[in-house]
Image (tube, rainbow, N blue to C red; front, side, top):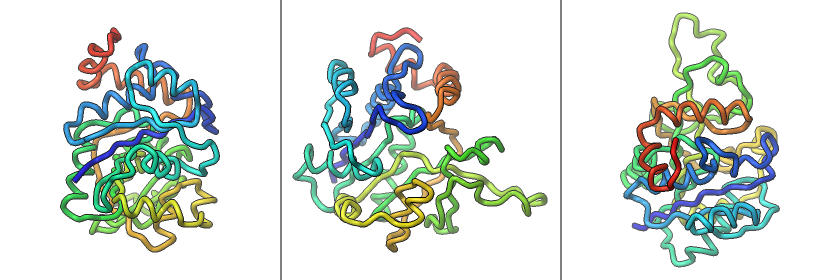
Length: 261
């Protein structure tokens, strides 16, 4: 089985324009994600998919493989599908495409390995890492996509609203999880996803995995207690920089990159 990692990134983010090239510890956000993915031994190829020349130039100068995509995609999964068709047309139907969004700055080799392992064990068409939320403010934050799953790991709902509700959970500790942008796709299903029309909940919530659920395809959730931060605002960037400074993986790749943290 081959595993291709695609990192979609674009400058025209609705909530934080230009964020892929914003520096954390002197290193651009998207290149933190790229370097952290490189720490996994399970990936055969890593590609950055973008529609912006500024990202292409910065990442290409760093030595990363970059593929240019259209600027009309409604979501990052659609961008990933185009990138795969362009840079890896020979992938077999049961090969794996791991999408790691370009703002998932705390992605770790363990998360990547867990997603690949669960795919190998289950052959689920979609495997999505979900990280534990520890702060009420994050649970209430519409920038954080929450997810609830059945006991068998099947995703039941994604929402920017605070799910599950805390209003009736005073006597019960209900774990809260956020969807991460670390999603593994069976190659054949990713091709199918690219032909599925957008769905009502997807449009309302602006969460592309709802397209999968609304069309009747299961999403397998893999929970981790490790906190992640998707960078959607300058405040997220500052918070992520502090976590990166303490993270044991950071120094390993910043030394190679020639950056002093």
